[in-house]
Image (cartoon, rainbow, N blue to C red; front, side, top):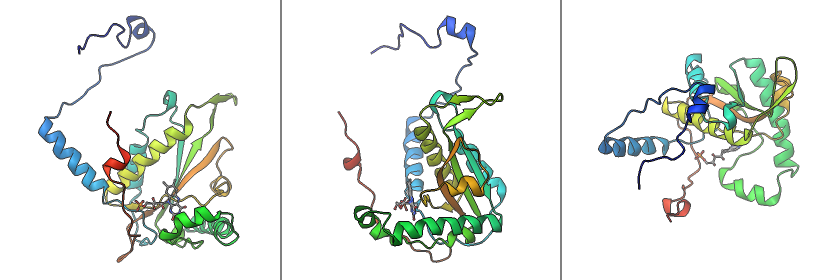
Length: 236
Ligand SMILES: Cc1cc2nc3c(=O)[nH]c(=O)nc-3n(C[C@H](O)[C@H](O)[C@H](O)COP(=O)(O)O)c2cc1C
C-alpha cells in the first residue's frame, strides 16, 4: 500500500480551468473518534418518529438551521435539487391536514394500500387521522427538483435527484433530533396537493412532509426493534 497517485486530483490542467482549494480536515485522535462515534450513535439511536406533537412554539431559527444542515448533503453534480417549504400558518396547516386526510382516507379505508402494505404497517397502528398536521407548530415540506428552470426559462437536467434528496432528508431529521426536536417522516400519497397549497412550480415534486415540534407529554411510540449489525452489514 502506498499513498502514491499516478493520476492526482485535481490535475494541473483541471485546476487551471476550475477553482480548487485545500480541504480543511481536522484530524481527531483515534480514542476521541471512538468516543464521538459512540456518542453520535447513542444519540441517533434515541430518535423516534412521533405522531402526537405539543403545540408549543419552536423558534424559526432552529428550523432554518436544520435546513442549512440538510443542505450540506452531497448531491448529484452538486445540483442541490431540493426546496424546503416551512410554515407555521394555521390556515395553511389546516389545508394540508384536510388534503392529507382525504388522500389517506382513500389509502386506508378504500384499500388503495394493498393487503401486504396494510399488514406491514399494522404494528404502527396508523390511520387516516392526521391531527398532528395542525397541532405541531411547524410543517416543513421537502420538494425534489426534478429539473431546474434556468433564468431564460429553459430546463436544465438534475442528476440522482431521489438519492440526493433522500440524503438531505436524513441530515434534516438528524439535525432536528440533535437539537432536541421531534418529527415524523410523513408521506400522505399522492402528495401532489402540496404543490397547489404551497404554490410550488411544476418542476418540483413533494418528497416528504415533516410535522416538527416537541413531543406531547407522555407520547407513546411503537415497540419495534432495529436490525442488529450482523443483519445489515457484511464484511468481505
Ligand atoms: C419514506 C418514509 C415514509 C414514511 N411515511 C410515513 C407515513 O406516511 N405515516 C407515518 O405514520 N409514518 C411514516 N413513516 C415513518 C415510519 O413508519 C417510521 O420511520 C418507522 O416505523 C420506524 O420508526 P422510527 O422512525 O421511530 O425509528 C415513513 C418513513 C419513511 C422513511
